[in-house]
Image 1 (tube, rainbow, N blue to C red):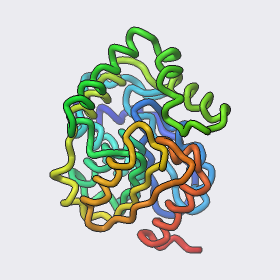
Image 2 (image 1 turned 30 degrees about the vertical axis):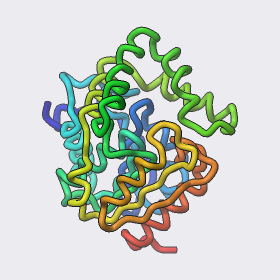
Image 3 (image 1 turned 90 degrees about the horizontal axis):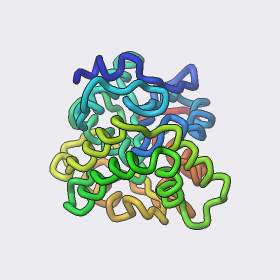
Length: 265
């Protein structure tokens, strides 16, 4: 599949009318809705674009299977439509796409913000098998029951009920087959450990201290392999740190952008 085909009708949410481009790539169980806090707050400083990945939420299903390179190429096409470079914020699966984007299209990536992510599920056979099994779970349960089973683990145990409901609703409204199956296979097949040291873009790596999904260790692996990296633990947050602690999260992102993009105070 070509990136042009994949992005022909990809849905995006956009906010902000000045400054550099910040492209936001969501996790495997989410959509552009996950970046509501960033669209609301960071758009005062940068142009924020958050996609619904192909086969998710308001984006149409892709014409055929997509691998990690295809998702990276689709993200690259969105950047080229709007700017010469972008700062790329990826959460979980979106972070894996962002990392591949930085190695596959380095000229397009001004900097990276990698949140609660990993080098891919292909680093471990059990993780890869578990990732592949999710598609069957979605097919059996349907989006709503699937979301109710998985959603609560994405935030910390003390997260407010309102946030848990929002996370579950977003997942239920976003995931479907075959798009989720393609995404899961792209994660299960990914092991980016060997290519991370080649990333030249400056990176901010964040992880919720109570991330029970990818976990702190996976984020540390990413941060330790990239030469120009700042690493931050977000307190009182689980896997979705950008949603659970948006004030702290956005402050760190803005600090990063002020260094890498000269965003004024």
